[in-house]
Amino acid sequence: MDISNKNLINIKDANITVIGLGRSGESAARLGKKLGANILISDGSSDTGVIKHGEKLSTMGITVETGGHSEKIYDADLCVISPGIAQDATIVNEMKANGIPIVSEIEFASWFTYGAIIAVTGSNGKTTSVNLLAEMCETKGFSPALAGNVGTAFSDIVIKDLETMPSDRVYVLEISSFQMEHIVHFKPFISVFLNVTPDHLDRYSGMDAYIQAKMNMIQNQDQRDHIVYNYDDPVLNTKFDGVLPQTHGFSILGERETLFTMNATKIYDEEHATLIHLDKLALPGRHNLANALAAATAAKILGVPNSQIAQVMSTFVGVEHRLERVLDVNGVTYYNDSKATNVDAVKVALDSFDSAIYLILGGKDKGGKFSQLLPHAQNKVKEILAYGQASEKISAALRDAVKLEQVSSLQEAVEVCHLRAEPGDIVLLSPGCASFDQFTNFEERGKAFKSLVKKMVPQ
Image (tube, rainbow, N blue to C red; front, side, top):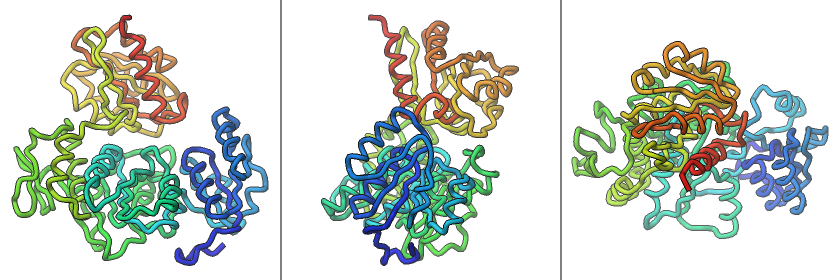
């Protein structure tokens, strides 16, 4: 199948294989079916949840196979691949050997819409930033839709838009490096780069490969498009010299020219008009100042009024699973930071508190260096509870400097914290790892944590 010209792509009656029956795979399959393609979706897992989703798709006329991949997957004109499948996986090499084009779900969905795309990536802060930006766009002249790695697949939004044809549509997409590995035509109007720190090093050969995957986001942008990036990030601050798109920096240090500048008391625009005083910001934490400035800069480029940007900054209090206050139990405050899936996100979480902390770390190791937590944990963390597949690595890195106990599960970690924490302490789930050893995703892990905490409340 020739997909070299986006305007000529027609998938009606095409045979499309979708690999992976997760959220994005299921949505891509439904989008392809709606547009008249013959869809086979295949997943190597025989998990109960996967089978249940497969049965639902079967009722729509989609061919489903679970528990392994048959040779039928190669009888295809196109392959849409799950972000969970590595670039060097056997199935990817076989598809290429058979001359079958491979695209990501984000790429696939982008073929069937012409709304403006604002794509936001970074090692940390993506979810907060896209939610801020989507709320800023909730104003006259804009019809924002939030999708991507944030929970709703891009294909789901496109399916609805094919029916309703909303005017002034703006897609605000949270983008991971995985989703940029199989890009052909994907072309954001605005690409936002928040930061780059070591992450997913279990997937990539090194930092250069990880960074390049993120940089794929700008490969189709031209001089009519925009890049927003963090001047304060040592990796990003020279990364966009000489590129075609228009570039705009943001900074909490205020050392270079930006659309919005911050001083000790306020944020102001290019005309030195006050946008908002810092004491009016609803979202705490210095890291969130950078997220807010990134969202505000993108919103300004779109033409969102300053008054709307300031209104959102003054009322937006955060997102679920990101430094989310759960409740107080006997004077101990529990925080759900399940979205912290790498070491740098844990550093940010630790730096957000002054009280003594019981820190729950663990899950599936992503190649992070847990020893980097020591400067942020010493004299603040009372004890670390390490659980899951990464618990031994966490213990080896930290046990000589911080009191640490290995436990078998998140439930045991919460129970131990409940027994040992004293009034005034904080119990913080900030895992620094992926969730896939014991949970389907970070959302399920966060919800499980909140449910366990709520069971501690005296009846």
